[in-house]
Image (tube, rainbow, N blue to C red; front, side, top):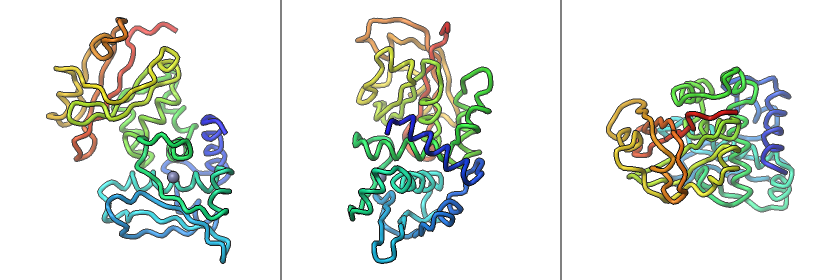
Length: 262
Ligand SMILES: [Zn+2]
């Protein structure tokens, strides 16, 4: 399945249960007969789904909402495990008895895990809802992304990831820590321009992203492609918006091409 088909599958689930944001994950579980088992499984645990052959049922183990500081991350983990239930070849693997430990979102290169992240983001931020928010302008500012995340009870980075996959604008979303990019997402248009590998490079000195680590709220500024990607030898004006993620030291940055003529 392509990632677009996987997003379509998530739309089908939303439509089948008549869901709107914030999507009721426990209702999906109930209707599908999936048991949700929350528990204290350790800090490194993100989620696991298992098929119990003796009772022919699926169970999803996930961190507790109450003890986890980021309930939106727990929701993302459950959405991710639902992907392994709904995507046919993931489910077949589970039924064949391969229990599966899921990894932290977005950083892995494993195709199965990546597909599950795409599904989770599309489930938590339904297409219809996202399209409504984008309206005729066809794009969202970082503050609108954060509002959308709150309304969907999704994390800021899951929402940025979802938006980046959806927008037709050239656009990048980056997650950095200590002045270094951990990983990033590029919109289809930006990928077509060759922005694929978005990890392990330094955040430019003086940028809004670096300033965001010492600020509360969003820091924004005008910047330049050449400042961020000097090796490319191209110049275009960018609009940079950055915000620190929760109480972590990570920063989410959106870079949008300012003078983009369609
Ligand atoms: Zn997984």
